[in-house]
Image (cartoon, rainbow, N blue to C red; front, side, top):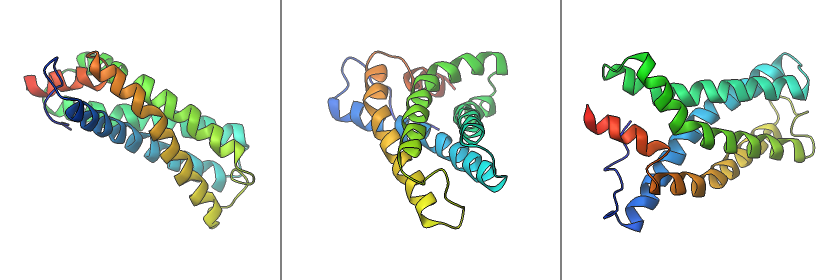
Length: 160
């Protein structure tokens, strides 16, 4: 996935904001896939809150890193080169999203006890993910402005 031209010292605030938003949505997509899948599996199996959250977090990282890695691997980069790029691009963002998302789910009364056919389960998960994305955005913007995070991925997209 390419999010546009990399931000340089000549880039505008608007382009930095747009790039940070795209990077945040990208990370949020991976987090959401993993988080939702983990919550569905844990809830369906009747797991404890801790077990369900642990699975959801693990899957969020797996899917988040995968969404960054797959386009790089398809471009011909070796796995050994892709792994550190994915880790640098996504670790901070996914960590923030997962902490915020799961804290909110634990704070919303009944959210972790709701069944899969309960609208409250889905509403709580959607709200938690949106707030988690909003919490990660300023950090993603800060990292991009310094050539970190998804800026590292952009260098490789433009090189291939």
